[in-house]
Amino acid sequence: MAGIFVGRTAELALLQKRLDRLQTGRAGLVVTIRGRRQVGKSRLVQEFCNRAEVPYLFYTATKGASSTEAISTFLAELRDSPLPTSPDLVPISAGGWPDAFRSLASVLPDVPSVVVIDEVPWLAEQDVLFHGALQTAWDRLLSTKPVLFLLLGSDVHMIERLTAYDRPFFGRADALVLGPLNPAETARALDLSGADAIDAHLICGGLPGSGLATGQAAAGLPRRGVRRSGLGRLQHPGSGAAGRVPRAGPSTPRP
Ligand SMILES: Nc1ncnc2c1ncn2[C@@H]1O[C@H](COP(=O)(O)OP(=O)(O)O)[C@@H](O)[C@H]1O
Ligand SMILES: [Mg+2]
Image (spheres, rainbow, N blue to C red):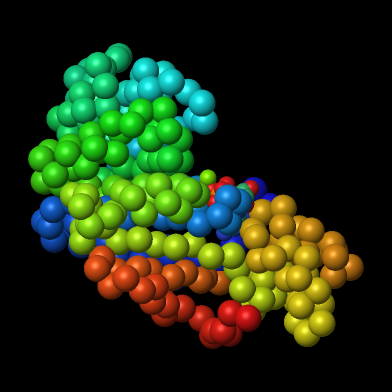
């Protein structure tokens, strides 16, 4: 299933809309994306980056890596990415995340770009100063550039803490909550209907990837191509409640 991308039309459109806003000269934007493990956060954002046609950096933290290792990897990936206007200005190492973000800010282009930090909670786990460093850098340096910052993580509490009321991101970051595919989407993805679709969804729980393949097998069907669908909920800053993102195709309420 790694090759075929299923659905997420609404989420891709939502991210594209924010990227489009950067074209009109607005300051940078932040979107946090959270959801349970394996629900498809990383894949959604990689797909978005592939389609976005702007320079991007996709950095994924490694669980258990020390702060020093994480920073070196971040800088190495920044240097090798199409993002920096002058890659030579990116240092090999930095004294801490504040320095690393300063380096990032100094090489961000003046055209729209995307910076992804995946598995944010793992960085914060290793370095209690990470959240503060990110938010200060955003406040003072990064937000002045036309950059779309995407922060991903499965740990709900840690992602929520990033946007808590006493944090610089409060009121500035949109929070996308990525849910599993719903029964209608699973059915469309697997090209099933009726009892077969319900069987497949009950087995895979709407999880993409191997989940869909399992659901397909459970429905006793050979592997087939998948169709597009999308589902998501977006919390607007300060709204406190999750609202539905309108879906592009015909919709079926979640059970
Ligand atoms: N929309 C999708 N279409 C097809 N496969 C997907 C989709 N979303 C996720 N997957 C697959 O499901 C698995 C888990 O997705 P991943 O993005 O790693 O989840 P997460 O980052 O939320 O833990 C991966 O193998 C990925 O390729
Ligand atoms: Mg992931």
